[in-house]
Image (cartoon, rainbow, N blue to C red; front, side, top):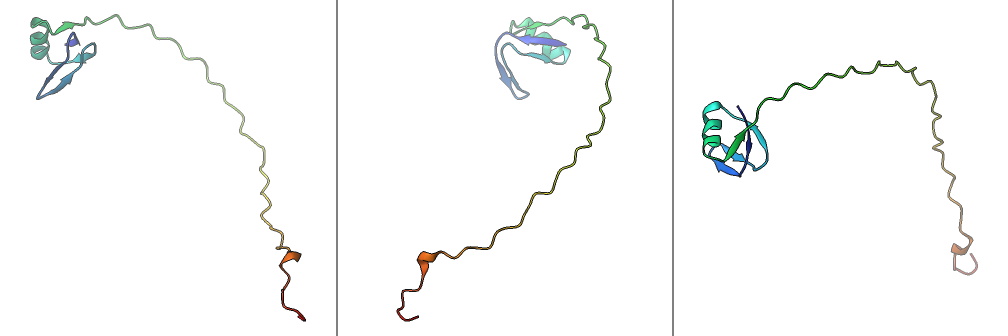
Length: 88
């Protein structure tokens, strides 16, 4: 049986939140509906099935990726770091 809760109910079997729909066994659902805590949700007519659009096969990508350059330049000598010793 499918029910929609009018109030929140909690018990050892879990929590049933207000406004949410739940599938419960007939005995539990009938008790909640008879007590005024829920309303029974009638099964709606199944929605019409829409036909899926045709699948178009895509061509595989043929682009190549160039390997990035990984070389680094050697460190340059900073002229301001000359030795401070005289006569050297």
